[in-house]
Length: 386
Ligand SMILES: *Cc1c(COP(=O)(O)O)cnc(C)c1O
Image (cartoon, rainbow, N blue to C red):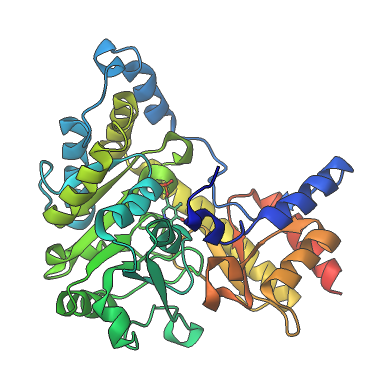
């Protein structure tokens, strides 16, 4: 039997080596602290769980869902876009329910790419932007992301032949893993570029709600002309601690939403309607739970940033996301430093190189661990570096 050729071209799983080392340490009874996973550690707010408990008893929800999402869910998404960003989207044609935004992003490639086409992806970013292209036998051009440019992906130097064959540009701010945020002028320039070159701009807004110090992240759809070329992905995973529920939505340009919907019609039959009902409770309910979550992460961010700087590790102070992006010490690579921290401090961090070429030289620390464990990790890292 022979599998598809692209499977052999998939990059080796970033964490496989680290996972194996961790398993070996834990088998010996070693207490390993993981700062590697971007998965909220606190539970889904109770009013959302209660809505699910009620929805699951409704026999109407036991049947196949509406493929594009229930009318009620899509309306709740549109209402939320209006109240959160002042953005108008038509629930019938400009909103699509997703089984998590990763699913939607991956299938956007299916909707847009033929073999040999190109996508433009940030040189430090969520692996599915390029992985999805690989699965369509398409190519990825990594847009440089430099610290001195605030980690804003630079689309000014894309070679002409790549641009001719490019169909999608992916961006995501607030950014996983760098924590960078984009100003309106950057989004405006990206929109102008995509309109000029007939590209779909896919904006991943998974972290728009996890903001600190009074910062409020925008939707790209707030910007003029955005709906002519943009599709935006919002996920309930991070805002409402719902990573396990698999619920998100795409909205924006109706042709793009429709194309993604057509692919999904042929692949899946939508998300369980009870999960959509719970998501309605999240989007339309009291938003205090989101503010509480931001306060929790902001405090942890301060703990981590202070501890890293005290050790002599350079890092940013992110205005958003659940990550701190730190420089590795001179003489180390992302992988060598992550391995050293695992072996000597029994602390797992993510090597930045796993997010793309420009991630080399950095590590990502996730804030999804309580204060006492973060402090213990910092103490151990200090010891290991001494
Ligand atoms: C966590 C995350 C998401 C959310 O993915 P889901 O599939 O909706 O859980 C999307 N994009 C990025 C960059 C993320 O880090």
